[in-house]
Amino acid sequence: ETESQNVVAMVPGIDENLKNEVVIVGGHYDHLGMGGPGSGSRAVDTIAVHNGADDNASGIAAIIELAEKMAAEKSNKRSVIFAAFGAEEMGLVGSKAFTSKPPVETEKMVGMFNFDMVGRLDDKTNGLSIGGTKTSKETEDILNEFNTGFELAFSPEGVGPSDHASFYLQNIPVFFISTGFTE
Image (tube, rainbow, N blue to C red; front, side, top):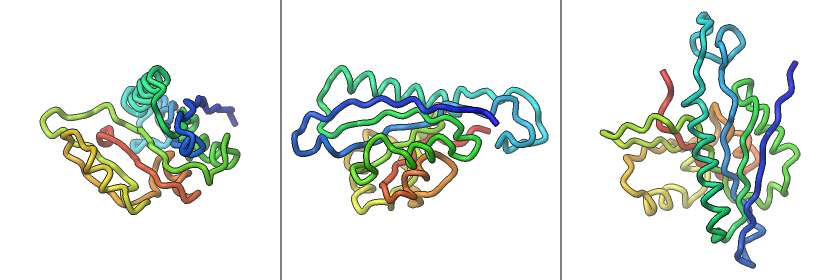
């Protein structure tokens, strides 16, 4: 047994009509460590350092940048909760704890953006994978409208091997953003 924590901050919304709606921006800060049996590694027979730069320091870096920008601009209409989840690699423990005892009612959560493994963007293909694109009617239209030149690969599922699944299971639309799996 071990303990883990989630790190959570909020930037309140400024629109009187929308500030009670909440968008979650999250990702996990743990990684596989030394690998081996029970680690979640796809190479369970390999006991060696499994560097966490892409999985998932890259996602946490993206979240911190977004939080800094939103906190400085103070122009977001909806409230935004930024969450760094612990123990994702051990079975989504942190995000499950967050959704079981949320800081705001889940009914107020209108969407969850999960940044997991976003550190390997290929300049040649500019490919971005987005899961959860059928978890709301508008998702794919919104993503295509605001796409700034990425080659988008959509996946409709809301359930998957990352923290967004905990939110989808609470009927919250999700966006699982990744640049691909680490080899």
